Structure formats: C-alpha cells, structure tokens
Length: 532
Image 1: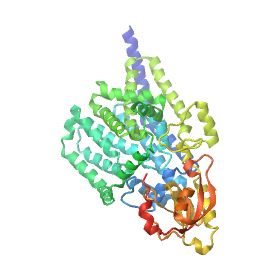
Image 2: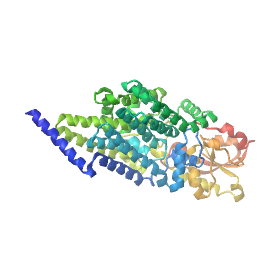
Image 3: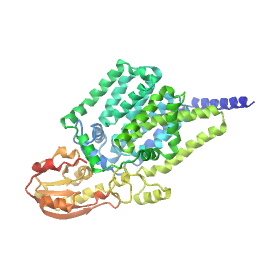
Image 4: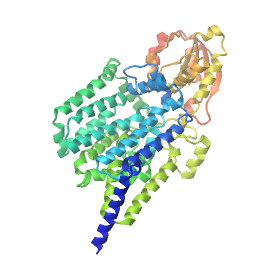
C-alpha cells in the first residue's frame, strides 16, 4: 500500500514537472533567464548612482594607456575600460554595463551547467538564484574589475570539462585552452584553476581524457593568447611579483586562519546558501551519482589548499562556486524525487523562497544601494559587520563602500587650488597623487574641470613618468607635511579634503609646493616608485 502511495506521489510530481516544461515560459531555462534578467536590472538600476570604486578609477586611467600588461594585472580589464568608453562614453552607467552583463551571463551559465548535471526545473532555479544573490557576486558585478568576468571564464572552462567527461569529445580541450588563455589575460589566477582541473582529472579514472592531442592544442592556444602579457612581464622584470612581495612585507592584506578563511566563504556566498554548495561538494566527491564528475569536486580542494598555503585573499576562491551550486541543486532535487513526499517537496520550494528573501535582505550589505547613514542603521539592525580584507583604516563604513566616496569632491578641491594660480604658472604645474585613486580621480573628473592629467608613482602610474613636468610647481595630494617639506623649499596648505565616510587615507591636506630642493622629476623619479 505504502509503495503504491509513493509511486503515485512520484507520478504526480513528474506529471507536474512535465506539464510545466510544456509551457515555454515556465521551463528551467526560462526561470534561469528571469533570474538573470532580474540581476541585470538590479545592477543597471544602481549603475549611475553608486560612484566609482577606487580600483575603477585606476582601470579607467589604464584604459587610456593601452598596453600588454600593467604592474598588478593583465591587459583585459584596461581593454574593457577602453571599449566601454569608446563605444558608450565615460558615464558611470556605461562603465558599469559590462560588469552587470557579466553577472547576468554567470547566472545563465550556472543554469546551463545545472542542466548538464541532469538538473530539472527546480535545480536550475535554485542554482541560478544562489548565484545571482551571492553577496560576493553582487559586489563583483557592481564595478569594473578583473573579478567581474573571472567567474564567467572559470565556469566556461568548467562547462567544457563537464562536456568532455560527458561526451568524450576531447576536441573541446581546444576551446578550453582558448578560454583559459583569455582568462590569463584577465587575471593570472586562471592558471591555478587550470592546474586544479588537470590534477583533479589525474586523480580520477577520467584521467584518460587527458591523453589527447587536443589537450596539447588547447595548451598551445592558451599559451599563445597569454604570450603577449608574458613577454611584457619578462621585459619589465615581473613587476607583479615585486608588488606581491612588497604587500606581504608591509602587512597590507589581512591574513586569516584556515577556519577563518572557510567562515568567510560562508559569508561571501550567503549563509542560507551553505546547504547548496556543501551538498554539491559532497555529491561530487562522495556519491555514486557524482562519481563521474569527481574531478570537479577535487579541483575545489586543490584551489582551496593552494590559496591557504599562499595566504591569499579570501575572495580568490569565489569564482569556483557556481559549479558547486549547480551540483548541489541537482543533489537536492534528486533527494526530493527519491523521497516521493509532498512535505519534502514543499520544504524544497520553501527553501527557494527563503533563499530569495535572505539574499534580498543581505544585498544592501554588498551593493551600494543605501546612503551611508542608512547603511549604518541597516547593518546595525542586522547585526552584521563587514569582514576586513586589507589593513587600511576606514571611518564608519566598510571598505567596499568607503572606497567609492569622495572622489569628485577631491577633484574639485584640486581644481580650486589649480585655478588660484596665475595662468602662466598653471601651465607648468603638476598635480601629483600618492595613490592610484587620487591620480585616477583627477584623470577622470579633471578634464571637465579643465585640469591636466595627473602624475604619480603608485603602481603603473610610475611607468607613465612625470610627463613634461620638472617639479617647479606641484599640487600634492595624499602626502604629509614632513614628506613635502623634505622635497620642497616652499610649501603651502592650500585645501583640505575628506568625505565624512571615505577611507582615512583619502582625508588629507592638499599642498601647493614650489622650489624643489635640488632635484627635478626626471632625476628623482626612479627613487619614488611606490609598489605596495
């Protein structure tokens, strides 16, 4: 009797799903598309009002100096900045459009991976929703950076690996290599993901898929695509390695314990989504159904182990989670099917609703939606404080918000000092910034104010040199009195800047400096390199 009831329940569930799949507007793919569209609309709604993040101002400046590499990143992000400004203009909406599209694309790709794992309508919706609302991805897709498209590139490679395992079509290794090469032009952590994938395959019976000429072809394609950046790094003596050594020596980045690292993963992905990706990891590693794709689960542990060993930033693991969301959603859907129980099915759909509600509640903690005062009240009400990524002093706001504030005001203050000078002196006056945010703010907002491009020695700005300036008259941003007195005979405190909620380092006196102490910019520039 009980078996008949169970079979009847299973039949009803399958009939309902089949009926829904017959409606093109309610298929799994359609639900994923709705979620992707909602994520895109959400990002576009705030694209013009969120302010530029400090890194974006730097990337926009790099987009005006297209090169095969930069001190701290490969060329793809600068190319994105150049493309956005060339085709769409330099508005905040235009610059934030590409990251928003990448976010929607990641949701669609997660849905596709879920289908490849055998997921139905529920699984596709669950995986897509978990990806769309993960706090770390909400942040990634709110500003232009390497991080905005990195998960998309990793998951494109993951999809190809899944297809290779599923079909035995080793020709797909060529496309894997092409994507990996593009990923290397975006962020060098792509090499870690590729290493993890290959090692994961070697540790499973699917290693047979590696013994193919197409894998060699893919590796060659990846190398050739990456080669221009590699040549640039060789020519410039691998500046990124020097930068990383300086950062480690200075203690700039927060170092967390392995337990702390894992706790941060839970926060970054949303606590309510924890059962999804943990189920995915377990399903890939330990279940008979997931055995075929065990290499994907093993690759997670490889990446995790390497990042822990290197004491890397906690968000470097973020690009791998959509495939775990996909696998976990399929595992949970399979559980619903096997139980043949309406109550379990109800719990599953209730979980979807809770995930959506929790993600919406947490969204203002990573998206620049609220005004600073409102954000502080909101975070206090939730009892949530943002984890620190860097050992830089903030005011009341967490870094991800504070680093978006004060840049237009800084540029206007510099313009006030600049236009206080006689016209003939202005022509030889340099505006010098001590970090790439200050320089980038002048470069982005300055043209509308009639300001010249800035100079600086922070990261890639150092390569661009002092232009034609000698140092006779310099408007200095972000230095202290001791620093400017050591270099100039005549120093005036010309203005004071600092948004109430911006980072502490962006609260400073603007100094008007004249009469350098026996140097010119050309002679002193090599000593001013600031890579940290």
